[in-house]
Image (cartoon, rainbow, N blue to C red):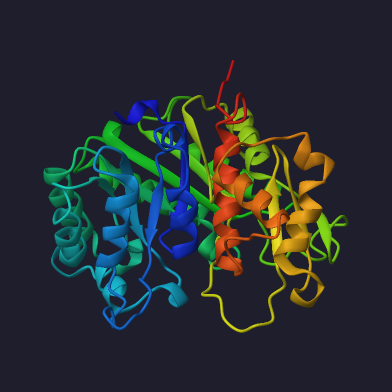
Length: 373
């Protein structure tokens, strides 16, 4: 079942990202193994607690009961609530998390993520108990490792990371068939200045495996989409610009330099890894159009035409016309260009960008595959 997948995007269960995924063509969804990062739901009169069960209900509707997906929890405070924090509680072998995912086992092809704790906390018995319980109830498990949470602030060296990573892999191997594990090494945000250093760290992590074929399915995920576009690169101006896509280049570099031939491509589907709930009214309308190696954008303030003008400018852009991407996202740009934007908030156009980005990967030859001679 899992062997056919060559793409693992990390998608938060916010309204924006789920909408973009929901509108993907069915044939595209069939080729994607998403890692959904569970976030709190939107508060409403009938959902005062913003329960995550509403997000699971959404996943049931848009993924269906026949497509597998990986489920993790968000670590971002703005997108979490007490319910999500409780899933990370290690008491009784992460009982809250295990009970939660087990309750959906019959309805969804869910692959739960194994939660870990720092080795220095000496709670391996809780982790082992969790793994054994999940292994008894699920055919596949996933482990998402985020090495750069502590490297970037100087808290851990690369050697420290390799030791920690090795410890976690050995813990899993002691209680679970490693060939049924999906390992996601999350490189998080990458930019040109961080490119080589992050490649080096991930190569060191992968070096713990004895041969060029890992014993488990392994994905490297990154995002190069910035938190702000204006001024991000030399070609990023106030009303238009071009953003370089680094994810595929990063993946190919890992494949070639680490000489691994069973790595699966992953990314954040053109979303910045740190997502905050949109607030305030200072945003500027912007429409993005992903190409193979870059993303072009048009950006106009609300008193200067807003999304309609963005759509009009994009619709006559040479790169838009010469790189068709027939999908829901492209149709939204065309509607905006005709004065009929279906959404007038950044959230909606995040959905459009995600939809376009993933759809383009499934055009002929766009999805990077790891081939090592």
